[in-house]
Amino acid sequence: MQSGNTQGCLPLFLFAVFVVLFPLFLADVMITALGRLGLSPRVTLLAAMGIFIGGMINIPVRRIERNQPFDASSCRFFGLQRFFADQTCRQQHTVLAVNVGGCVIPCAIAAYELFRIAGHGPGVLGLALTAVGINVFICYHTARPVANVGIAMPALVPAIAAAACALLLYRELAPPIAFCAGVLGPLIGADLLHLKEIEKLNTGVASIGGAGTFDGIVLSGLLATLLA
Image (cartoon, rainbow, N blue to C red):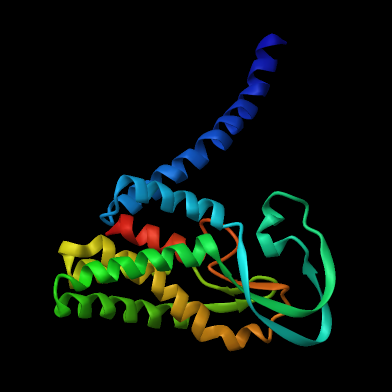
């Protein structure tokens, strides 16, 4: 009986270990990726913390009125549906929002990286913008509107495309170029160019950058940086 109880507790113990270690693994991956962008250790740590915490915050930028009311999540505005039981309420509008950790902070880092890339000459900056343009095209054609979510697309597609473009166009600066393409590709191609389609979706909050830390834009940018 004692041996059986031990074996029965083993899966529970392994699951508990996974729950504890997996966030640490994700944090290590994020810090490793950001560290390859030439950021100082202090800025890297602050950026990682900002992405983690900011992933739960959506800043409203526009309100879209609907003709008919629909059921929407009451927790989605702050990304709290991951921590609490999801509750719905009737509403007749969609809030278009920008996610702090999934969009604002990655875009700020991408702007800084483009400024650094420009220091290597206009030709190198042109190659970086070419990589961004290619990824925008790919993201635009692979993104699809999804009810109760917004605009969605396969997470690995923009990351792989951004990394491949960076390696082919300018290998010496592949990580920062891949990050810029991985961030701006989904932002422009998947989100901004598909804003009109949001008006057709019954969703309470359409968040640019997703409602979670590793959704959408930030996931693409970090994966692209690691792959490059």
